[in-house]
Image (cartoon, rainbow, N blue to C red; front, top):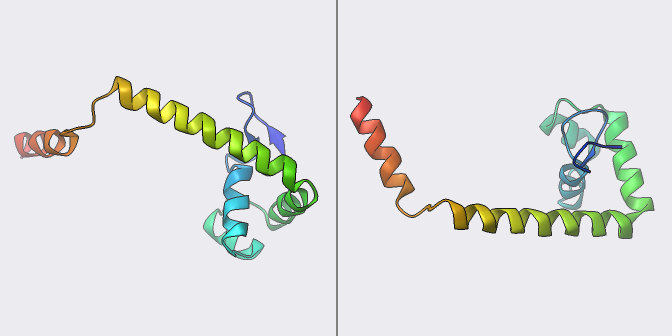
Length: 99
């Protein structure tokens, strides 16, 4: 596992995050199923990520909780900046104009 420039843990040199593998594992997916869902991953890397998670569960859970808080903060900031009300209607209107 390596942290990228933003401090996000990536698995096996891919863009797949540790969070993604942990969520899938905690939902009951086997390492083989995770590789099927994310073909960029190697089976050995998924086993390694799961082993790391199981060995350092409290640390990984704290890392994931921090990432979830950051995501919620960013989502709230974006919602405050960009009005989403009526966006579906605006998109459908644009599509109608093109047709």
